[in-house]
Length: 137
View 1 (cartoon, rainbow, N blue to C red):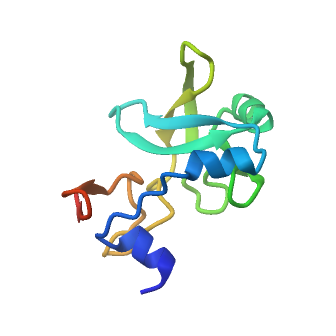
View 2 (spheres, rainbow, N blue to C red):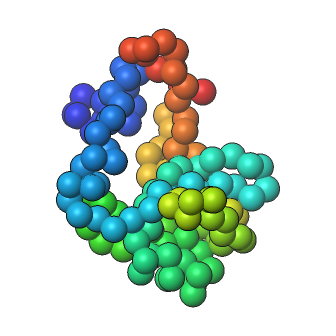
């Protein structure tokens, strides 16, 4: 199993406790964004927005994020069709994180697929089953 496949499909815990540190050391000017399904309340995934992505989200009316790994702006669903239409943006008290309340316009959300080959409805498709183990929901 490849490293990416083991990370995305495996049942061993491989948490990246240095993610925020890596973002800071790379000099990215971003805030975390929780993407939440406005109808179900489910958290779909967490991404990051720089000022350009934030403004583009408001202008387009759909989720636009900044990829800290690719170092580029990406419009969620531009290639997959799984666009997230913006319903509301909420900001926390310290103005250092956002919630994009969205409605799915495609068939799923996550870039991974389930065992049947379908796009997953959320990126949170596994639960912790102990300090070193995961289980599929």
